[in-house]
Image (cartoon, rainbow, N blue to C red; front, side):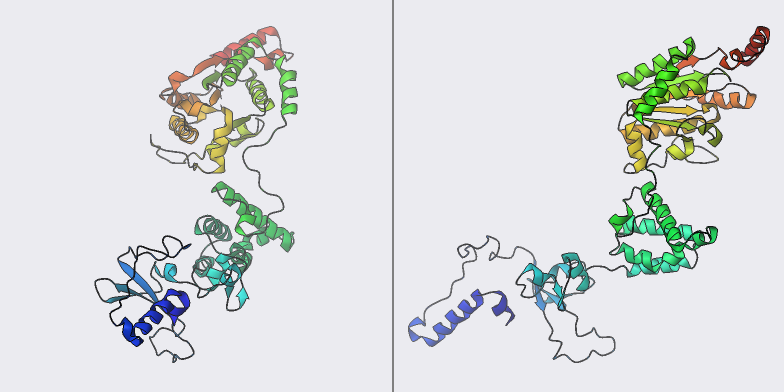
Length: 454
């Protein structure tokens, strides 16, 4: 019956065999099958000989005529896939075998709508139909994973686990996972923000979850089936208005001293040429280092390009527009014993890697507080992400430093011993702008300047 429904030529074959048996004149006739030929209009591979070593057949059970299974037996609704070996014998394929799904089929489909219909219910997509048939893995294991984590993990760790599941676990229904564990995912936020409503707490959790997804190279929440946060987190460094930055540059350019202009022209020449360049700025306190750095940052941002301002400490980073700590920006590993092979924790497909590919200028303040191995790890990271075998991936780098204090000088010596040090152009500011603007006598200014220069 199965062959009659699936292959119309079986009827012709049986009719020919029956006629030979009944007609005495055809007693010497033979039935010859030509496997190298095919009916007109049919596909070349439809009726050709099998080329595999195994042939699969599907034995469909009739659930109405099958008795209830005994203990240890499979349910009556299961399908047995049996392989008939060419060398003889049979081999049963378990429903957990990787080849089982490929051997399943929908019997007698007449349209795409019929393919999407399961037990009389029309599924919205082919994937949903396969899920309803049990051909795809469901999210039960992810629910068990989160349920187990709820017993021993803090809510923030749960949000991080959910972000990992969404990115690499490819769950069937991410919104169902969120709705099931929303109370546990927001528990700490409800405690710390008791004055907020339930909707605001949920939005706060979604914003933090989106931030985790972004940091791990994921997509937006709606792409995983979750509701979008009201205020999405900012991607990359702070955005600046090119027109406003051009006004800042023009207003302050005429206020630079001769020493500052020399540094400005040297750095901007490398930026315009696009060949990169490493610059080291030695600037004692009061010589206008921060003022000069703001002009250089405004020059790059006025052209619609990206400039990063980082510093060794958070306090120093706040003095620069759009400043961040170096460890936060470059993901420098924090270790007691540093290695010459340390690398920054920046994935090639992450959002931060895309920022590094677009950056034109990096200003790294307080470099004297940075270990030379951290500087070298950033160099390796930028070379790898930007795919350029140049110092810092061809990015123009400016390292200003305030020299004073024996401890800073000792750390500075470590930076000077780096293999990259010989590639830096050295600049120095000696004119103390801060004292020139004060009401102190000229002798006092000269004496204090000499003290700073020692």
